[in-house]
Length: 262
Image: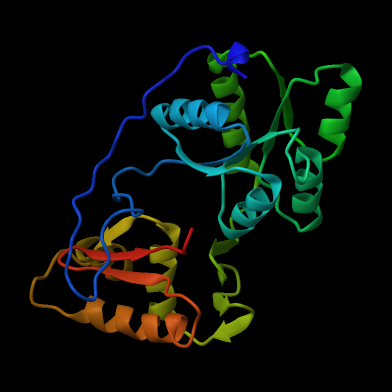
């Protein structure tokens, strides 16, 4: 696969210090609020190719998730909102075109960039008709890959309307202002919904108390108030009680993080 990859890049690291205290998780897997990076899904089975794609896109400012085969790609694509997905056409279990067709049948409209060594006109036509939004033929330059991803990300931001937020099996409908988990409706008061919505919009990132106070209550930091703990506690009981895994995690001394198991 190396013949179409122009260079090896090193990921710009972002280290979190672990917080080892009871009833709190560490910061690994939760990104800081300041990053605000767009999220991409790379579906690629070749380890070397996958590593280089993830490294390059990460250093280009994207937050990248990797799926090593079609089944994992389907699972990840269903569980999170991505700006763009790149997908290798020739995957070992379910081929890339079948993955895209499945997404489209389920109403998942994430723009898909197909990457393939099959570059004949008929191949490209089949890929686009299967639901792909763009087609990149190997060998390619990383500059072209980035330009195509950026174009699809702009289309995603302007065309796809964000009306449902998802984390794991939790769904928030922003139109009806309702929440469900595993298909079961969760009864939330208006302020509780606002708290959960803000946490879910920052899926995978640490949300400090001060940020919740400012964005949900429009108040500046008040070290004497416990209103955040009270409301997050109520939401946690409604969302995580009697579930297979928790979604709302406390980062002791910092704030909260919403994330589903990978």
